[in-house]
Image (cartoon, rainbow over all chains, first blue to last red):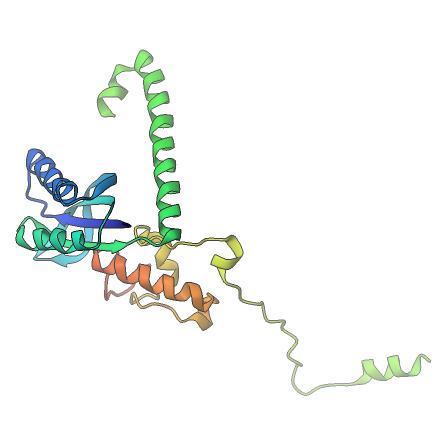
Length: 133
Length: 92
């Protein structure tokens, strides 16, 4: 069992529902092939540094998981077959990368909770702020 | 006893003597204890690129060989994912 990290970029033309479905599909591919998802993040629509398939933006998705090496082959085959995926990258995390990603997740989790707390406090005063959040 | 001191002050050089003390370069990763270089952080990786988006050599950045390899790996991953450009003009 190894730790892996995979990122893929989806075309910007997809709707919210389609994106959700796409993200779910690849998480499904991992779990069905004996992988275990550690972390899954949607970074949202980001600008690309250069055009890929004539597209200048794309939706980024990150999945961290543990599993056997053979799983990568199946996953990447699925990426290639899916026309909605314009770019992907997967690699094995070494021990420093694992430590870093745990730290990063904790930091992100901490950020969310601290952001939620002021938001909740503001909610009592200003309902407008909540709608934005 | 005071004579040699006097002589020293009388010496005149045609060209000013180079006295600039070179600032020693150091590896920032070793110094701050960073073990893993994240490819997701494009802004950080830009410190190791020139304006055309090329990776700067070790002799300019002072990065140790161990971490230069990791910088290169991270930059290449970021380029693949369109976080950093392969080629560009005036990046900064």
